Image: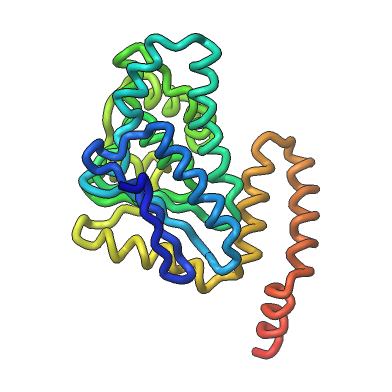
Length: 251
């Protein structure tokens, strides 16, 4: 069985985590398959968005049991290398040119919640559940901390990462970690409609917006403004912008 299933309904590509019998738990093979699928999507100029979803009842339950067992006997260096593989996946999502949208149903827990939060956008079914239960077993949700902190303030970030409780899709929406919640029976069609909105927009403008947004994270305000001016100038030189201006002036 393939670790991921890739389907493309131009201009949207759906990448499905395909370990339903393991609640799509993350192991080395699945992480590697996701990286490969994302790189392939990034190289496809015809795409406008990528949807990441899970097969079966859950989005992703976190680390695979065998991976957790390996942690207990691994050396510090081996554990750093293991954790870095997941961190590389989170970084890769931000490097992909098009928006990567997590479509969460069922549970997204621990590393699975981190995977969803690492995506550019998150949509969820009404019954979806999120959480970072790592602290219950003496573990730290460290790989996602940088992402959560960029989405939330200190107090809420610390609460979510340190108390280990699950929270609902509606709560995630209020926190600002989910962009939209669909009723369960409308989730599948709602996901595609949400992603297909990007087919009506300028691909180059969306790609440059994504790049700018993430590049200003660690910059001072004045430096971010200067970078914005550079990106703005580059956008003006694209065919999409030139055509858009011409169409606007014809009205």
